[in-house]
Image 1 (cartoon, helix red, strand yellow):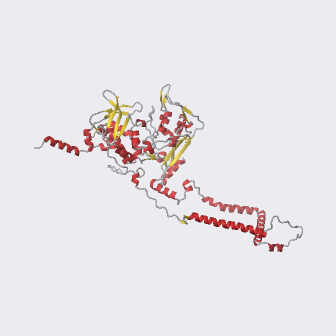
Image 2 (cartoon, rainbow, N blue to C red):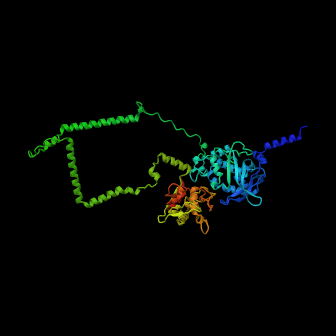
Image 3 (cartoon, rainbow, N blue to C red):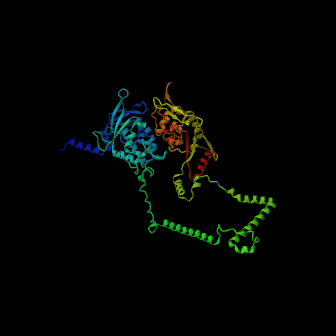
Length: 590
């Protein structure tokens, strides 16, 4: 008779092999944290609570969130290492990457896998190790630093899927905004290191990424399956576009071979022909000059010949002279006499009939000028500088018909010539920082009033009202219907209250609009500045406002020295929709 224990062990092993891979991991792994407890006093970001037990069932209130953020976890009884509040925090923290990476589904899928495994994986203890703690209340302890073991292949695959993704609001690569450095210097390692560091003002606590393909001690790196940017997702999401994924574009077309050069005697044919033509012209020219010189020498007396006495034979025989002159001289004399007689007659006629001449002149000028009634002045620079049949116009037409024409731009450039420079003294220490005249708070309040007045302009077209909201570019609609306004005031969310926001006491101002401005010009994508204000830098339309687009007259990167403010309202443009185009023109004329 067989050993029943051995049979039971075999059945258990078979059952484990049939379970999903994540279920097996969950059976063996434990959590590192669960729930939130405590906040960072500087950033007000939430810490997670230390917890070393098994995963807990997710309350039903979190089912929609887990489906939205981490659908791969929605199986079985949904035992995870995160609660509903942690899912809400994860969703809030993903708003910025969502704007930049969601246009490439595969890239955003890998990105969310990275954070879902970190936040909620039921097998956290395999790849997450808490290293620093902070007492909270009673028996709860906050985790303030963790080590995150990540598979090198996963990190490289996540980077490769995202490296070409464009940021629609800035027309540059998204990783240039999410990597903490120029996109050409960004790679998988320093991108993940920047995302895990508290220096980006978004991460609530320090996360130390450790890259390895092999286990390190008891730690097994997180090496989940990834999707390439040219692959579809299980939910049916298509591959990324060619603009965001070079793999989708396929091989670049090979240009046709250059034609065989035309040569004469082994030299470029055009060069040889031009040299021969030049030599022929030179020979003809030199020959003509020599011939003229020889003729003059033979038939014309020298200027040094003696002068004959003209007092003798005063009477000239006209017929004899005419016989001696050439045909050309005779023709010139007759033409001169004809013109003299003609203009003599015309002058006499004008003197005798002044009224008739004036009337006929006016009629003639009127007839010649009648074409001015049909003259059309061309002001469109495209029409002025580009022929309708040119290659550039053909390419523009193709782009406009397939993708839509480029935005219409309404722009203001504002200076403050009657205002003086101001100086900001940072607290608690630091050298004084000069601020240009248009960056005074009173000027900014006035500019904000002007900006609000432009937003409230109302035009009328075909008895319908037209406002900026009907025309403006809103890249995140319908989730965010705010108009794109590229203005320095968007660092303060176009709000007088945020502009006036300051932290201080009776003696010092710890942080105000000066410190917020200086921070936002260095990190325009930040959702929370590192000053005591903790105000966001992103514009109300959901995108960053780059300082070189809204300021002018500064030197280098010293944006605080700006002498001009630039406000730009991008409007949607239309190719074959005359109705909407006329609405935009009507609003522009208000």
